[in-house]
Image 1 (tube, rainbow, N blue to C red):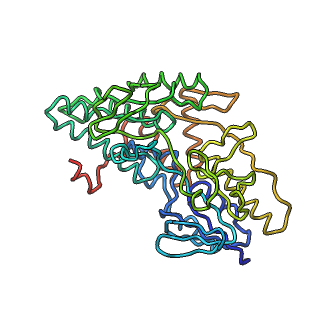
Image 2: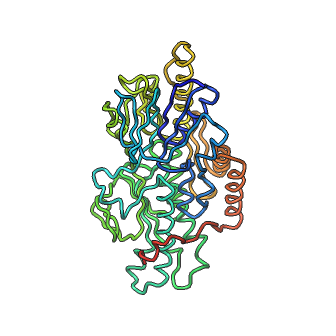
Image 3: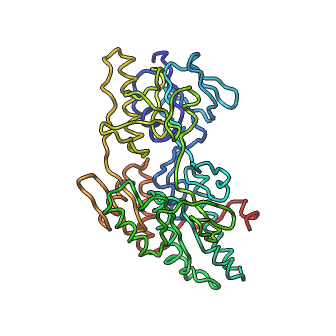
Length: 420
């Protein structure tokens, strides 16, 4: 093994793909992450909506690399990068030297200047976010069952999702199914079928990155489930009592934010240019401007396609970027010629609406309905890590499909005592 030290910050799709791509390269790798697990984010909304448990979509990073002596895993939070000294600083005071640095630090929620909305309208990026949303959804029904004030009961049974991208659409569809089909027989004082699920989108259609015909299909499928859709009107206020959509106030005690993201502070760490979302504007080989030994991948990077459109912030894109940078590092270490610039291959866009409808956009080929739903499910099961997770998720989906019952409806957090 050589003395070349690669520090990778972030154990998401891009970071892990890079580490996997450097297997056998003869370098020392240190992987740093704020959490001890890799998270399969595309299914995070299913934890938030009681379909899957946390252990089915997350895996301890140490376990993934237990048989890789070249990989050292550290649980820590990066606070800064000194590109001149080629060091990374951690919050606990530790400093890591590097020969090559890869920042795959992801993104977090963006409230467009209204960060004070976050406590009442959590986003969905981590397991903690998912369990918080799940707790609030389930507690809303429990509180409504004991509430005698009709107006407050209606507010408790109104769920508002801000943002109609894939996450917002998927959350709205599952919450509607949960209220209208799963829970009605379990409550005595309320009729959960009267639950309102409100989906708000500032743009003119749901799923705006999809083809118009698929967007229209998704809207009809949501409306069939009873979801109320508000288009062309931004949310102008969020508080504990509800949301203001344009000039109309909607009493709603459960709000979920799915309207936007902002990148990690990587650009500030490096002192380089960033786009409006805070992403590092990288070179064609995904290195940071003026820093050839620093690479940025995934949601932290602003990467343009050959047609001038940005590479989307989705898992396949991050994996392609991580794999590409691994090849660049290998070529440099072995003295081989530089690789051609990174090219993104779009493998399609997918979104699901409830348990039997989905849309898939492969470009020329577009699918919708139950066939798309089965393809969507198979694709997600394929990309899960490990046979056990694939089997567990497939079984959970099959059980829900046949019985209509969600298996992860436990309220276990200690904080529930304070939320009553």
